Image 1 (cartoon, rainbow, N blue to C red):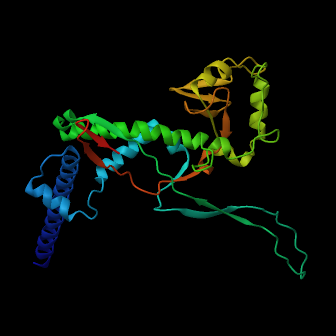
Image 2 (image 1 turned 180 degrees about the vertical axis):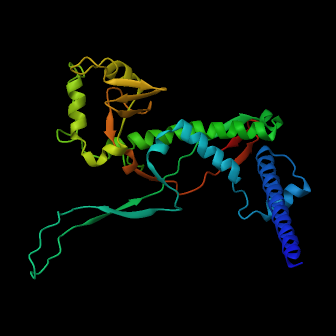
Image 3 (image 1 turned 90 degrees about the vertical axis):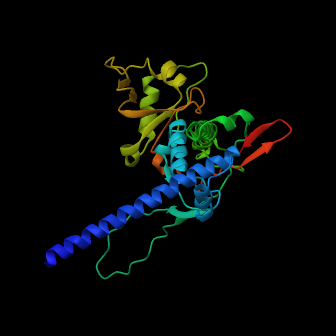
Length: 301
């Protein structure tokens, strides 16, 4: 019957899709094996050579490995999860609100004159972050899985720490602009405690009062662990309730979640919506290898 013919055709189509998926997965695994064997200086099998040759971009890091590196970098640099992170190749420009005038009441039949609202163009440039790792030739004896884990851990730790530092402390001169330099801090947007003074609950409330309510929904407090425990932890409100609360390992100050980063200077805390900070991964992670005959070692950049 027609139903049986249709069912039969559907089975064939499904089987064909599954076969293509299996072939694709096999090719991806062969490419991954070829990629790391080349980094280790080993010979490739015929299948691996073919997979490496037909890859879209020769020498491109395997997708699975690239994803693993980003996951590990995010663990080392948790601020990447807090900011708005784009993934646009090359430099990227976008418009943000500049001068904004309030709406007005219109008199019937009267002419309407446009307000002088403005937009500001922000351009994110690209900066290379590199790390050169040199290890003995014995690394060539590692299994591919062990080598991949070691290499991705090394990249994530070194590169991730630098990215976290730039997000917070970047000067904006030949490097990204960090949170510390994103504004000119003064009496209208910050609270300062004298070196001879001690942080108080009143200081914290004054800081919170400076943040416009529009940013409250996503606002968090960023500081290092030393500042949290030495300056904030002992504070109490007028009812003698602790300002800092802890829930399942996460700390809160007046309900604002606390983000911990060792890259923040001592005795400094930032309160704000960090989603308003925008970064861009303008290029994929690349790994270049070279054998150094003078030291009988392998170099990975």
